[in-house]
Length: 280
Ligand SMILES: [Zn+2]
Figure 1: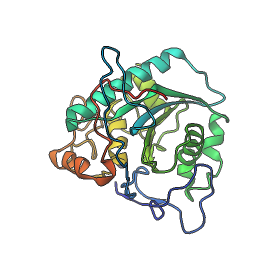
Figure 2: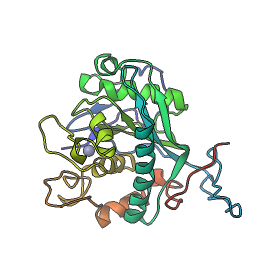
Figure 3: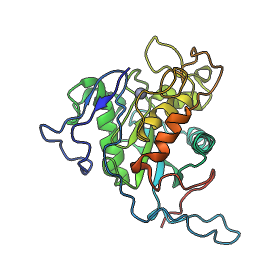
């Protein structure tokens, strides 16, 4: 496993724009995990706002950085309300998990789950050149990202928006984190709904992994980590079910410290479990 070089990471591009030559992220190893390369200036928008009395109000979604959990339903797949509800429950669990690791966590969006009924059938995302990657292995990542960011009006490495996106279709080995988002696979989604025996397979024929540990690994990349830490860390092999741990992986003190010290994360970890912004 290794890192990734993003040669144009500091450039904010509007979703949908073609990436000019010389500005192509080059991935190697097991996923597209990147180290955040933008300054990530969040300005003074980190104010958590007031409590609003008895109503569970949060800050405006226009004023705080938020994480979008996306339910990306390909055109030949079926939206299921139960799946959306499971994904919403997972979003709060994931938010709380990070609080247990960092002592701080992020705001969820309003709505907590952004449902996107996608334009194309699942195979299109896999097979169509994405104008982002040279390696066809990452076409789906680029194509899904472009559509998700277009629908949500998010830029690459957007300083106010990060994404954890779940498609419905399964396509092993094409999970990654890049451009400010974690891009999961269909069996990761199925895992969260209790299907597949409650496991997910990052690689076809490979070792099964923990439903929450796998996105924790990818979101660790979004927070700026590479494959680092002790072998059982979430950023190494800890999210695999054969890693020696019986359950969920954790982040080492050094990795936690790096997340908290990373400038691009300034303003991102000022919420409590259960906090979400309020749509303007
Ligand atoms: Zn990785």
